[in-house]
Amino acid sequence: MRRRVMIAGWLTLLLFPLLGWGVLRFFEDEPVALMLRCNLPIWVQLVAGASVGITMGYLARYIVTRAFMNNIENKYARVVAGLQLTPFSVIFLSFCAGFGEELFFRGAIQPLAGVWITAIAFVALHGYLSPTNWRLSIYGIFMVLAIALLGYMADEMGILAAAVAHMVIDIILFAHLREKGQNLVPVYSPFQRNTPQV
Picture 1 (cartoon, rainbow, N blue to C red):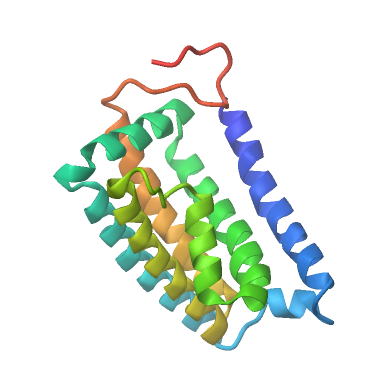
Picture 2: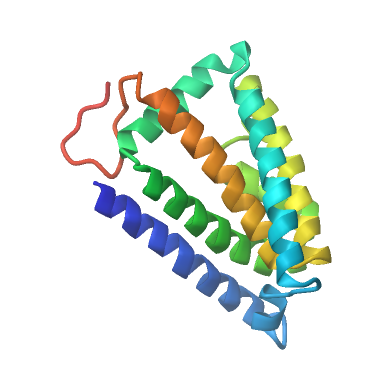
């Protein structure tokens, strides 16, 4: 199963940027330059991305650990437990999502749709905006704000800053859910074979 998780990570890292390039190619003369825009030195983007990622990651963790979010936290912790992630795979998947998704959403979609539409679409596609689940939507609204901040970072600093921030947010949340999930019964994962849902 870990092999399947790794394959999913590689697909995210490789296919999302390729898809973004394909989208931009129809609208822009230099799609790669736009996707990989870099306005500030790399070291500044790394420091800013890590700082924003740590801040947003721990704020997101704070929200999901509130009592009213307990059922949602447990649900996602069970899903993560079902993935049987190692510390390395947490970092690897966070890297793949951070860079693959940022190159697609902030690199390719945002120049066409704008910061806010892209942020809302990103969070909605992740399933965090639900008209039938106000608790999940509270987290979703926070994530829209956090992802919009990453959008502005991509525009003002460079795509690397947004990708690093995204990666760090994911590491913090994955690590928390992995730890929490170790004490819970995992649910069926699409990466498992012949495992009944509990």
